[in-house]
Length: 237
Image 1 (cartoon, rainbow, N blue to C red):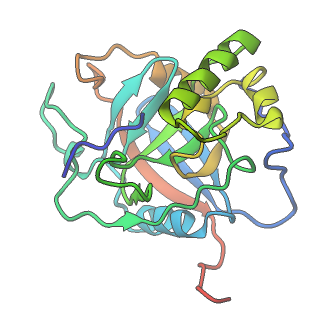
Image 2: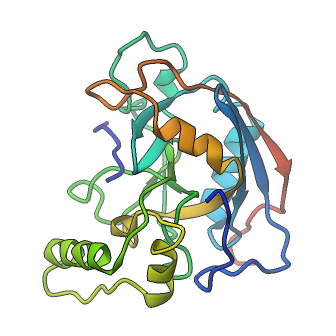
């Protein structure tokens, strides 16, 4: 398998994804640098249920945040990272890993700071934007001004000639206050957000890394557990 890449502390109520009264699943990631509590969106049931099932089965216990890029994101979930030697290059996963159909719902759901999304293989082999069923990332990103968002918009336009893909104004307002990674919108499935422990994400995204973006000192998911559950999705219902 090709290597899977992903190209304040105050959570804001935003128009792109308002918090309703429906019950949402929550997961706690106990890491070597602190606890991160994540709420999963009902709007992305395939990704939500996949993540919950892996957490229940202990699949993420002992895995590393193997790819960390300051002012961008922290990525974990590589099955091979559990017993990886120091400095070993990670991110390829194991052959034959399942993929999840994309559940991209922009602009309702987007890459604000604290969003959790699934990594995936590139467009050349994955034009349908199917997600990895294992590797995920948590967004840090940066806070943008109008000029910065204009540069991102230009980058999006160049990557998608002939298409009109404007940054949604309500999402832009969040990128100018909370921050995030707007260039990833429409390309990766976001399926939840950090509701506690964004300070821990901040600490992790600042750690020293090697030339492969792996932390010099391992950052480990000691244990993941389900705090709140929901009924699993059943197609057609």
